[in-house]
Image (tube, rainbow over all chains, first blue to last red):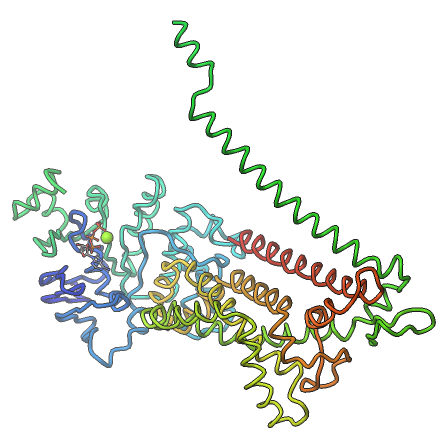
Length: 252
Length: 306
Ligand SMILES: Nc1ncnc2c1ncn2[C@@H]1O[C@H](COP(=O)(O)OP(=O)(O)OP(=O)(O)O)[C@@H](O)[C@H]1O
Ligand SMILES: [Mg+2]
């Protein structure tokens, strides 16, 4: 029985006068990986940032549409953004650990949420570093700066950092684009394990990656959602010509 | 064949120009080094004369509390510099401490809270404040701050506190604009990462932005202190110029610079009185070296942490 955790309807977004999203309808199932694909500039990141309201930080952005996250309207006036971002975590394209120790990075979200108990923090750090498949590599240097790690390790620490606050959904914006193939595969393996417990929405330019890990794939083109379906169907038997053109590399 | 050989072996016009440019730059650099060195040697030579030819003990100089170079006591001139040293440090530290919260607050307004208004209004204000000559600050201090002090604390109104307020306004733009630079150099990514983890804006500022910018802010503080320590004219106008050990913040006092500016024109080169002033200048010079060293150390430690 699949459970829809997040529903978006008729999502439109304007940067000033420029409409970057023209009405996106897209739903996300619990414990699935959904991949957002499409050519550069089509609005994947923009759409992703709507989901945890990161676009609110950009001046002059207007977002309209329905966002139903576990029955609540994410954009309602009284919706607590801080709370939303604890439930919908985000991992960015560039690994961006804070210039602090690995440990402090991972427990950052808990600390700002007011958790002080050392045992709880230790426990959460260990669990989330294990979930992000980086525990063995860093367990002996938790007090060292996270900036001293390799890019791939940093990105997994960032994933651990997002997991530590136990979100329901994790958004990832091209999480592997700054990494070498080996690190990318490690992250992919991590994501596949994580979907047991989390719902994952990831933007990727790597179509093989989408094919390897995603249950659902959504194809964006210049601010429109062309089609969204099971990954197999999108890759083997797309409904729209644009999709098959993109998949076969005829443009984008 | 020979022609090619020749053209390779002889220097081209461009490489000659390049060499000439290099020689000129090196000569300028050498010239500057020479001048700096000469200043150092000259001040050191003059400043040390107090101890070598006038036989003042260096401890008496640094620790003595009586400054009256015209008078001799037991055959030694009375040149205790402690009152001025204390005055300088007090004014510097107080002014910087007072300026710091304002500087950080203003800088945060400009980078994180209302960047648009910050750059439109505060930036020009800061630039204006930097451009105002120090005599104007001193004059305002003399006509506004000193009477204000007088009306509140009684006495003459001149003193360390008046100097502190004047210097506060003078170091504020320095510290603020350098703090702005430090805050701006904190990557946007850190802010987004923090917010995306459910931190509030204040938590983000406090836990990530300010913490990451700490080495830069420390550098700003040291720069501000260096500026305050070396400021002469404005301080001299409001501090009262009494070479006494400061007993109260609102009693006339003096600083190294104020004694120097008031005294240097009234003494004859080579006399004890003059030598003693050079010794004060030497302290100033050493202090500015110390400030520079501190800035370098902070910058280095900041880099190491990255
Ligand atoms: N902060 C912004 N201000 C104005 N326009 C923006 C901003 N961010 C994105 N855009 C515009 O919105 C459109 C969608 O951008 P977006 O970053 O979402 O694309 P994307 O699909 O993520 O591309 P890429 O694959 O290159 O990351 C682009 O035309 C872009 O120029
Ligand atoms: Mg993008």
